[in-house]
Every structure is written in structure tokens, then in C-alpha cells.
Length: 143
Image 1: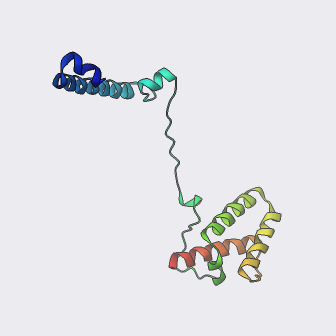
Image 2: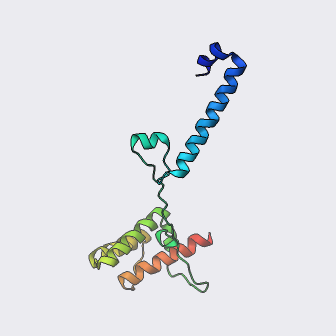
Image 3: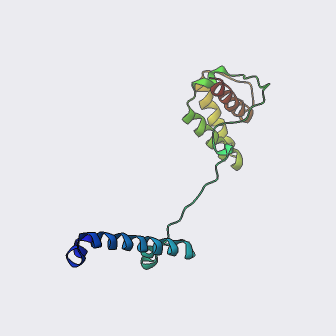
């Protein structure tokens, strides 16, 4: 557009006009955004689109981290053999299985943990998995 204004008004005047034009369009765009219900630009209004910004609330419950009591004493040092990804999969699988009452999946998860950690435990299935997850957190937080 600047090239169009130069022959008509001269270079200095064209630059000033372009600056004013950009300022005015910026102000119009700003007011459209703050005045429209969905904070839409002119292009969004014409196209019938809206940009949505979704914020997910994060909490400690969706991570593998657990708060441990300062007096907690771990039972299975072999829990350090698990990776963060392993721990996340174990926690997610365990939570879903426990919520659904899927004892078969919990039993399979326990067997897999015992195989990976090369141990055998006398604890009940759910108690064992909870203990392993606490031990994993204990050791990874101490490292």
C-alpha cells in the first residue's frame, strides 16, 4: 500500500499516512476484540470463527508424585528399577482398575511388577502396588 501512496503524495507523506493507517487499524482491531462477546478479530467475525483458550487445571493427583510422610520407610528398594514412564502407566492402570473393581488387571499388574523388580511379596495385590508406588516416589525424591 505504501508503494501506492508514494506516487500520489510523495515519500514522506506516504510514510506518515501509512503510519496513521496502521495505527487506526490497530485501534479498530483492539476495540473489536475487547467489545465482542468472544473477543473476536474482524477476520474472525467475517469468517464466523472463534479462538478458544482452554486451561486445564493441573493437580498433584494426575502426576506420579505422591506426598509421603517424613517417617515413611520403604520396603522395596527394587522400585528404583522403574522409570518415570513405568510409574505413570502403573499408576494410571491401577487407578482405573481399582475404580472399576477389575481385580484381574490388578493381579496382572502385581505379577508384572514382581517380575520386573525380581521379588515376591506376601502383601495383598492392591497393598503391594500402593507400597511399590510409594517406594518409587521415596527413592526418586531422595535422588
